[in-house]
Image 1 (cartoon, rainbow, N blue to C red):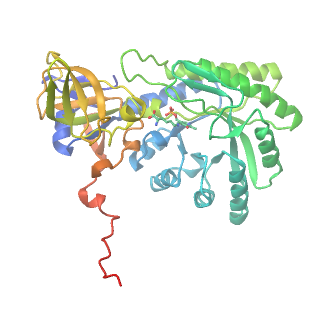
Image 2 (image 1 turned 90 degrees about the horizontal axis):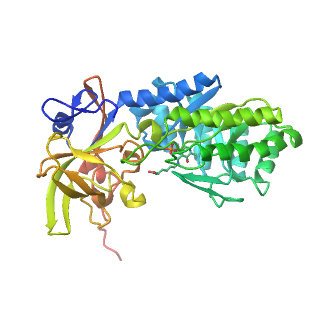
Length: 436
Ligand code: LLP
């Protein structure tokens, strides 16, 4: 997919760059991002909205993968940016991202984070709870600013791939509850507050979703309320933010829709309700993370030790694991991979790909068909671009990998590999002063 192909000497090539060369130059494990694929995905969202003639903002959910270069790319692609912490906001600031296109999420933004974002004049807060409303009001008064907000609601529709759970009162830590009237109270509160400009409502129904049904259900549910707020609270919705969650193909059998299909179905549902209730059409905002960067990322590993348990399993270890990809251990997520240096070789054996962490659960892929593999071969694991590097960690004091962007035959290092010095940077020596 994307610009990935196998070149004349049987090597996996991405963005016109030979992955074997990349591994040589930058070491492994290495995250390689196919930049043109990210451009393509961003464009698909843009085109979908444009075709339907609906005002929109597509905010990249930077939790999926944030670093200065990625945020700069998001800016270049004219995306807005969803941040969920002071750290992600700081990254956006350092990247020179226009603050008016930043949306700040989170169920427990600290007073310091709120202050930082109000001072930076970000575009919008997605307010999660009453505590935050109060903190925002105070910060707005202190900095003499008017602050734009959306209210995050839990519409009681939860989608996960093909499964939908509908509950009256969704049991979630996020957002204002619809059924019990929390949203109504929050709207009243916000409309009353001089410092706040209430733009609209937000919901996010889940992640890695393969169908449009959940989004349509959420729109339906929300509109029964939106209509009543229009009548009883005189609240005119300017923005409806429907979150992210558009699925990608990790393995054979995953069948996500083209991004335009999600957008189209959702907007048609909104238009239907707007007409039905004689309301005005809001701007539609969305927050894709995974679907923008997920399949653009490939991780390269060098193979090391093997363990063959006759008639049981063949283990093959890589020089990374749950430290650079926590998803298999955390969610039983599945991936596909190939030998990047011998991509044309005949597939012979099933190998189970083990990470190097001291933990039995540190397995990346079970029973992956590969050619006969040796240590020093290069394994490419696909679709690691979302929630891979961003959830990387230093378990077992393993340094985090580096990240390169590739496009049109060029490679650019965008995140350096951590060093052992980095790992002990915050450690302080034991105080050896004699105790009395
Ligand atoms: N908006 C909100 C409010 C969210 O909570 C999320 C993801 C997104 C947008 C972006 O969702 P996406 O388009 O990436 O599905 N670590 C998990 C995924 C956690 C998603 C959290 N929220 C994983 O690796 O599957």
